[in-house]
Image 1 (cartoon, rainbow, N blue to C red):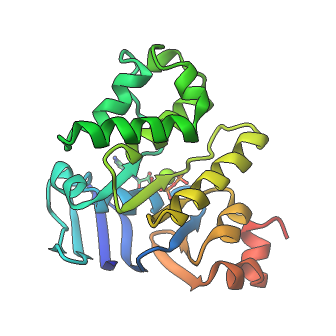
Image 2 (cartoon, rainbow, N blue to C red):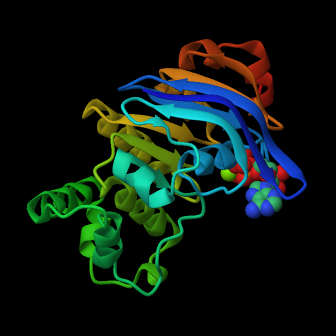
Length: 235
Ligand SMILES: Nc1ncnc2c1ncn2[C@@H]1O[C@H](COP(=O)(O)OP(=O)(O)OP(=O)(O)O)[C@@H](O)[C@H]1O
Ligand SMILES: [Mg+2]
């Protein structure tokens, strides 16, 4: 469904992504695991059109090569990103932040339905619908970022560290929600520091190191791979 081939990302003189290729099949959960600075966020930001200097190709079924398209166009093709570090709008309410996630849509009824759906996934957000985003707790802001990404009604949802800063109980909840969203037919590209949980739910996984893919396999294969165990699963 989405095929990334020989992707390179540069920030000035820094060569952050050095020829990454990934295949994301429709309906799957695909995860990217890797140490800090491995190039995970840069990869999804490139897919979303948020990095200026990149080469290679990103082929999205039915849309051709989307590399170089504007971020808004990419959202319109059906790819949404819940960015790392939340990036919600602090002065807008929860409700307004969700509404913004639907800015490319004009199906008022569909938007209202999806908003209720997001509130059912995250009841905490519903309780706080009129609270300013910036006054939410870190974990609540994280939920809002995920909810906002869902509001564009994407076919592919890219989640950059959705469990970051969540309490252990909420981490389990967010993984259950990711599985649930996937069961509704949405394709998921998941970045996680929590390698065990991510590999456990992933159909396919890629291990990144310093801008390249060093290992790939099914989630289960990598969960049982000795090198992965040693480097990412605490032995
Ligand atoms: N805007 C930027 N300007 C300069 N260098 C950048 C920029 N963004 C990222 N980098 C560099 O690119 C490399 C890859 O960063 P990236 O954010 O993609 O890593 P990551 O795998 O998501 O790491 P983390 O797990 O810490 O989020 C890092 O060395 C980082 O310092
Ligand atoms: Mg990152």
